[in-house]
Length: 106
Image (cartoon, rainbow, N blue to C red; front, side):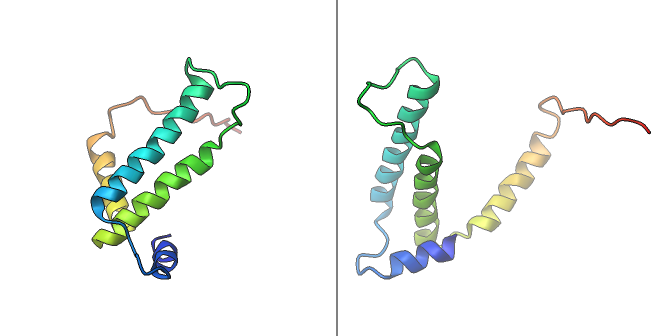
């Protein structure tokens, strides 16, 4: 995903936005996701004339901006993700109740 975003951004003279502009864009996209979630699961129904939003696309917009951020700062997201998952595996392995697998004995 990082390579694909970099190829797409690389075709434009402007390139990546400055970090503060990307933060503003990320905040804007998270707000759009929050609005849609509030409409679907919260106490604020949509107006009848408002179209149904797409949660998957809202999440993908956020992912795009995060990838832009990482690319512009030289961060390998796959490596960072692997590190954070290891942190969660170690720190939170006993924090929640694990599911019990249902296996029938033959």
